[in-house]
Length: 476
Image 1 (cartoon, rainbow, N blue to C red):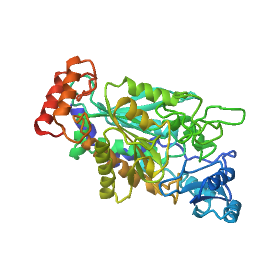
Image 2: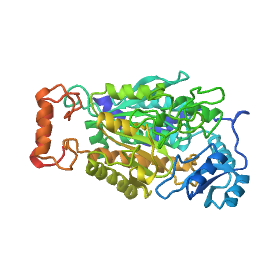
Image 3: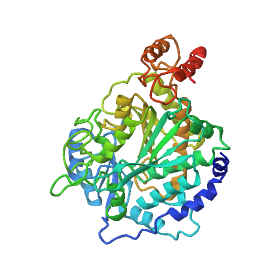
Image 4: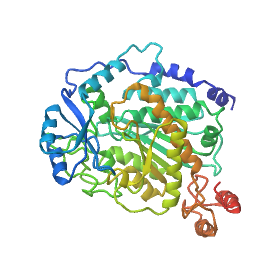
């Protein structure tokens, strides 16, 4: 136990300087790197389908995948095409004046000398992220274990971490699991650093932050920093703005949108596309891709997943289920309570303004990970669209890394603290109806329907936890 306590007393600053050695060498821009000279990003207020069809003709790169609650869509187009929008009377504003200048600045910033540079001072490539995971494993023995979920289309490892304290689980098998995955979309680099930053902060503050200690003592976090490794590597070597995976889909097309490839809501053209060239191409069937298969299989193999966040960018949104339809999920009151608290905690801790809601505040998206997690596992699950709101889009300067990481840290801590797992019918109180639910599950023992300890069954250990909550009509 002493080495565990010694490990967690290492300061965050010391860890980050140590992890600087895990950074990739400065990335030099290869000759074949895609360029976007003369391109801009516009925010358009389409007046109807005709305007949307015009945008689709002008651009193959939507930066939003459908109209938001305000009706706005963001697209990358050439500067010359602004005249076409004006000619047709399409209302628009220019968000990014020069996409290539933004990319050039990003590359120059990453290529600055790395001496005495801490890990979260810059972005790291696939190898750098893998090395950092190994650094956390070495720095926090007993708290962090590296896991391998499987391989991508091109054979790259999809790796992650199991993160929890050495305090044993109540059920003696495994603590309830919270899953945080990032980078389903390759160009959303800020999601990787935010996931790793949150993990690092919880570990480094275990002895000084009561919330961090409580979370790691009671739960196991499964961290999957790079869900789409092939796409991520491609953004470093060929096209910084690539979104999908690297599946060969046709003679001249590549890529499937992993976050349209999950089975719940899959196949709806209202929230995905059947076109091979579309950025939201859903694939030929649900879970056609190894990247989504391995995440699904891992979560199905866990005794009890209780919460999940799928990290994306950009727009500063916390999106609840359902994403594929304008319908309220069962337990909406409980979902809204937790989601609203996450939004408010970010505002209070970092000052960033996030909006919480369902598909009505963004757009329909069918075949997404959170809909599958909620619909299949019954766990609380949200999509977090991180910073910013469009000024930099997917190409956030490194100055955003720590602030955005603190956004996610606040979301994660609040989400876990607000979970009401003994409230089985999700009405925000632990009462007689929950007792009936528990009694039915307890009678069979083999089900995890009312598992509060994380061991995958409903047994005497769960009865003790539930009884404490039922006695006070509150959650454990």
